[in-house]
Amino acid sequence: MGDKHSDDIVSSSASQEFILPADCTNDDKELQWAFRKLDATLLAVIILSNVLNSMDRSNLGLSKVAGLEEDTGMSGSDFNVVVSAMYPTYLLFMLPSNLVLRKVGARFWLSFITVIWGIINMSMAFAKNKTDFVICRLFLGAAESGATPGVLMLITLWYPRKMVTSRISTFYSSFAIGAVIGGPIASGIMKITNPHFKSWQWIFFIEGLTTIGYGFVMFFLLADYPEKSWLLNTREKALLKRRMEEDQVEGGHRAVNKKRLWRHVRDPLVYAQALIPFCGNFGTSTIMTFSAIIVNQLGYSASASLAMQAAPGICGFIGILLSRYYPKWFGYHYYGGSLFIAACIITASTILLATVNNSARIFALCLLSFGSFGTGGIGPGWLMSNVGGPTRAAFSGAISVILGGLGGLCASYIYRNQDAPRYMFGHGMNLFAGIFIIVVSTIAYVIILSRNKQKETCTINVSHLSKDEQIDLENDHPDFRYMA
Image 1 (spheres, rainbow, N blue to C red):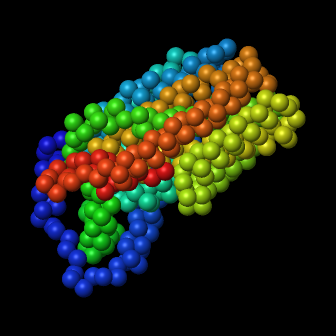
Image 2: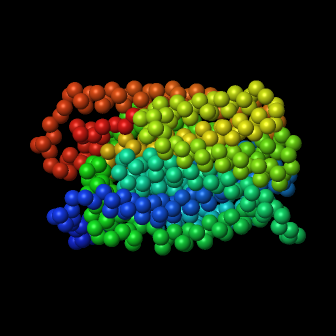
Image 3: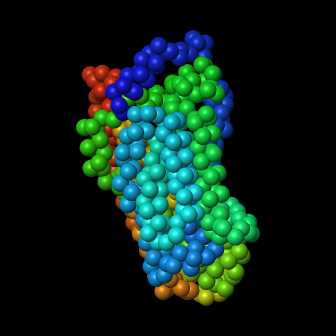
């Protein structure tokens, strides 16, 4: 965090202490009401933003079905190159974007990049060839790079650890919502007749313009920290502040600890858990970018293919919403989440590889969506639930999205024109991703059990350390326990 911004926040916090009354003993209901307020404002705002993000990402595949490839002279692997073009800048600018967010605040930065990526999406309506699209996608990747890691960091600063998985699952459900409504909306937009604009151009133009408008709305609805919330009253802010302190999560005002950051960079647990969304993004990219294309190759018309994308999208939405309950139902993220989700992906991919029956393959796409979108909740949710401080939160959120982006980059090339209509290579890669989820989840589970056992048997006395030094221990604090 920049020094000036950090000093401003600290001085503001110092001048406005939120002190609970002495008789405050039964505040659970008030705290629960405060979190419901946050869900209805903060969470709702970022979810709707991500719905638009999801639609803006998937409109490229929908536009291909609407005739983009033929109208722009693309052939062979040109379309795959265009799809993948956003990921190099997406990954390159992710860390700088996160640093800017820490300096200027989430309210301004998330609103600003939303407007920018809306402008870029609208500009793609005027692209004439592959080169134009590649340039637009490069800028799009840079604009979108800070959105998801910024939101993940926000959630860890506003919610205690036991609520993180459910909120992240709810946030990631917005990708599925975009897949549900994106196809039917694009199908409706295709019906617009204009001699100067083709149907796929209208898709980019209208959806981009909508995103621009919402970006301005976000600026008036978001807040950087709980203390700045326009909806919470003074008592609710105090209750929330105390709850976060009890959970050993500092409220976001501390700068990233560079020494602690290096320790997190070397932690294999972070990478094992972050590889879950990497694998899951093979399936989510299949649904968001290629499902309408796959359905179109089954013999359905362009408009029907776009509309039918809603079915896998609905299954993905259900899958990611249910993923928030897996740790509660099964007692562990590992058993109820990762293994079950991996089984869905493996089963779906096997069906897609084994049969040419249209009904069976559409069912398999729905099952693939159910499992793959579920990784969007259980993967980052499990990772961010094991965050003990702002440094761990910043690094974990960034590495989760970076590896997820790499998964999307790899998935850009697994469904190739020459493999139509069976797409054996693409379905085979999804099968491999499902198997790999089991491997990395098991590694993470074993590490967590080992570390918790070590904390129980080898207690460390930190009473000689100052409060700040104890906070800086983050996950190494003797009272911290990892969530399996």
